[in-house]
Length: 350
Image 1: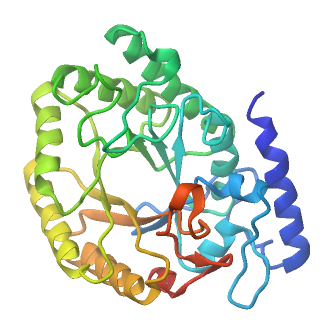
Image 2: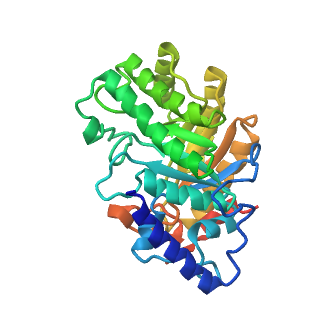
């Protein structure tokens, strides 16, 4: 199978780290080593990290270190800092293979073996899906709506069944990524409201068929902009779109994060009152060289999300904290420097 090429670099890295750190990583946090997450975290506030680049980074030779300089597998290191959940993006047929279903399976099994909850993030694209990019996969480009709905369902089912086969049960599943304008353009644009809702339902039903208890998330960017949320969730309400949770992104600037945090918390409360759904903050980040400000931002957001939303905000995920500075064309919002976490991640401890 195509995904097997990702297993061996990952396995080699784990062996290497084990040699460096002796018994440090042998405590898998309650996982039984088979990939099955046997720890119940039903009511635990999620302090998560999207580490979708991890297998690619490892193959490139990147190694991660704790504060004492001991080489440590990245997810285990994040767990030491209080992270209790991992988010992983899925692309349909990426040109270099990373983030395809097989690569995601490798990472999900590693997370589950550490006792970490898992979020699966379907982009329904061969590459990045975000506010400026919701490109239909090349193999689906000429599909009509019936064919596109089937493709969404089949792709979702494939990933879910692969996880099921290895005993990994995702706690959350995103149907689309930062879909402020819909997904799978042009047919799935929010302007084609029924189409968009039907595509969402195709993914929703495919998830629930395999994992009935997984929380299906519709994820929008700019958590401090309520109009984007009312637009999309208003369309889903009109056209019968099914989902369990509202997902947000929030990327404030270091010199003015307080207002976006307060607005985001107010929006969470408004959205729950309007649509009756809990909220997950699926992506946050701040420039790597603003670690002190980032720690303050994350601490404030975490405390207010837990205490000022009536329990309806269920957690926060940092987006690619492990990324080297400038990785993948210029990403600078990670919170590791030279393979070691900065003080920003201290906000997730305890």
